[in-house]
Image (cartoon, rainbow, N blue to C red; front, side, top):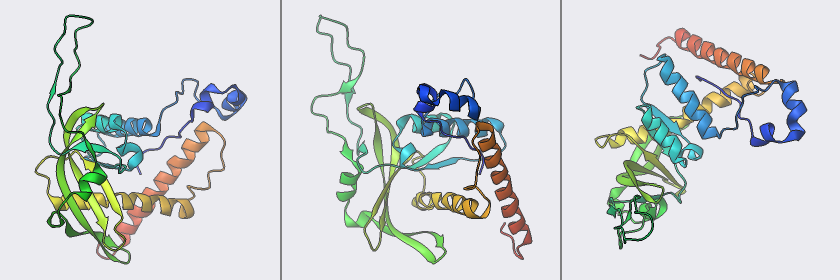
Length: 261
């Protein structure tokens, strides 16, 4: 765990019914309402600027994966993102042609690109997955779980992301299907074109350790016992939990007979 920030809903700053409570809880006067992807982007930027870590990947759930501004922000930091996306997310399997419509001599001269007439429409990632042949899927071991290896049918292909109805950057569409239930997980990845399938498969399971951290911190380290009602108190509590978690993990590694390399 690297950072934390309390999410402040819009009504905390705009609803007069919260005015007295804002003062009692010590909310910063310059606090602005930001979405969770915006807060995540700020935290990532702070870690990059601190130069405390060397890292390349950002993994995220659908809340961030379905937010193009977040993905563009991660790319702007020089990082690669691997983000889950809703099945309704649209992509092109090949980049469609675009053009700036010719000026017809009336009104304002067109400046924004548009799809050429007859260009194929973007399809949902669910439709793309359904259209893949059987040989496009291969069984892959994602990682070793507590009850044995996690295995899934996986497929990857290069697609073109949609940005405001127009073609955006080339990205990887990573599909993971549960062997028994058939449940489909869809993700978009901005890693380079020569990224191996095994790397995509490994990254598709890297959110589980994060979730495990939260599961451990809540009952064992008191993350869920923050009986505080102030902005500063909440951040103090979460900071101590982060430090406690780091200490416990560090000691566990040091006390192992054969610590990992």
